[in-house]
Length: 187
Image (cartoon, rainbow, N blue to C red):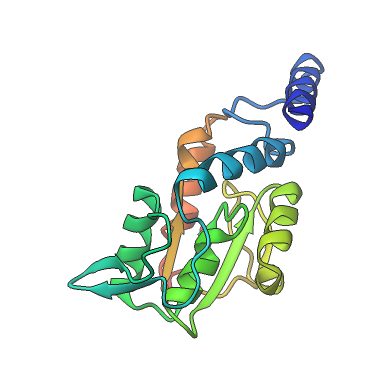
């Protein structure tokens, strides 16, 4: 409750001072809201997979461990799609707390997973939830082009990020960043 009130107060203060952009969230403060969202989701869904929790059969993830809660439908679709593609590498734009990257690594052992997130606070959440991923993530705004050191990957994706970006054409630039193909020059 205290964190939620602090988020709202800081959010309003930044808006009054003209520091807030037009997006749905103030990304520099979003980790406070995100932590609350994780707590709510954990009541109903499995957010972090362990080896053997799920298996792929006939193109669908099936729960192998009966004591687990189900996956959120969005996560299930994301994982099923990527697992069927069998990529060697993925990059998540807006990786947040890192659950999707960690779960894909569980489902696809040996996967080279990389993540980008605009907010340092989100990367702090990731460091708490998945310390093994810290070396594979960095701060980066989805609306900015990737740098020359960002090597190509087989699959790039974002989950529930673009729909919250309303500042100018940032959502279109983010979509373009996600769609850069292996070996294709980034713009």
